[in-house]
Length: 138
Image (cartoon, rainbow, N blue to C red; front, top):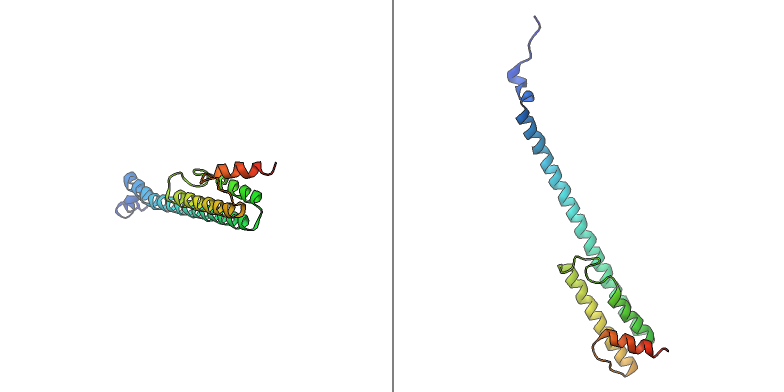
């Protein structure tokens, strides 16, 4: 008579509940690790976007310093239009706040540069500066 398998030794294999729990117990940590890796990647990407945005604002400020007022107005317009809030960053997030603060600081700095170069004062509204200096080209 052939030997019967030892059910005490291998009985756990046949128990569906235990197998299910082992599968779920193994998949949950894998799913959690995958989720955390994705979140980390997304955060890294957003920080990279923020660094790039603030670098562009600084580049436009520097260009406004070394160019004619009309070109400075173009730099100001570029700063205002470059990926507005909510496009590369989640609107209202901490990174969005940092980027928008840098945008405002660059706009104010460029207005100061334009004020000094032109000897004119069109106020604090960047759009007015753009309109006035664009009009001086025509």
